[in-house]
Amino acid sequence: MKRFILVLILFLSMDVLATELVDKRVVENVGDIHSIALDDQQTITVYLPEGYSENNDKYPVMYVLDGEKYFLHSIAYQKTLTWQEKSPAFIVVGINTGKIQRKVLFGSKSLEFIDTFQNKIIAYVEKHYRNNDMKMFFGWEKAGGFALDLFAQRPNLFDAYFLASSTQFSNDRLDSVNTLLKSKTSTTKFFYFTLGAVEAWSLEPHQTLSKIFTNNSKDDLKWEFYLSKDDDHYSTPLDTFNKGLALYFNGYSPIRFYSIKEFKDFGGMSAVKEHYKNRGEHYQISTDIHDDTKHYLLNQSINEGNFTFFKMLVNEFDGFIEGNDYSIGFIRKISQFYVDNDAITDAISLYKLELLKRPKSDELRDELTKIMNRKLP
Image (cartoon, rainbow, N blue to C red; front, side):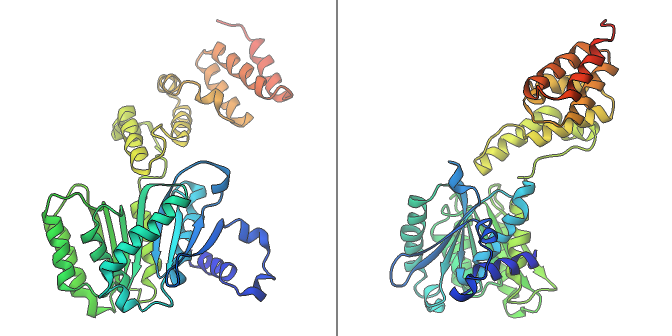
């Protein structure tokens, strides 16, 4: 993962002369990156996931403060895992603070910056890019302290906060969070904050924030504080992105059952449907059972020789096998399972449907001929 981030930094942070040496195919495969000046003080960098221009999907958005330092981290995370469907693709907005006095922006002028954040930055992104309602925030050091003001003042603005080696967890800010959580106001659903064990000067306020979350437990608020024995003030952002996003997206990966018993212990088909309903509503995607889950269940039933369970799945997932682009090898596996269980007519029907998709396949035609030459019951 760290190596991938370094590669992205190498390709995406070069000056003009070095850019001439970059293989453009590598850069294009990362996605589109836009640099935008909102005014003399405020600039942002926007990453659009690969394939953004080829569909009409709406995406979550990750807003990254100190974007000039940490913009690439969440890109690396999703580029590593989206192809395995362990993470959704999401837009990344880097808010560049390199030329701004961060101590003032995230301190005495934090309330002013909250208005700028919501009414200028977020408003611009939501006007110009396809985004869904899921918004995430990342902040390091002073930006982590600013996050408490942001949370207390705009509790419904973000769905998740990821904070690394935060400073300026002042008593006033902690009290504001405590007051908010004691109220009945609905709040952000997720907090993940980290600290290196060597950062002893910040440990007490982090522990105080943990106590506040513990003492004001809410069903819609999940949180975790991770104290790393290996990281320091400058390396915690890596863990914050990687472990924090993995925890936040832990329900995104398609479910795979490794036995029929495991499926039944999970709660059976009704529980699977409920899981995907909740998953779809949370990530604002389809609420249907994922194709991978359907495939693994069908394959498991064949591996365990449970034809009754297999037939139940075929009926439940009506048209799934026929509509899938399965290899000839797997079609043969299914057909043989039908034959072994005296369902020869089903095997014949499957081969005929596959031949409609692949009329030039001699292998399918041969297999169909073999079965049709058998005596039908």
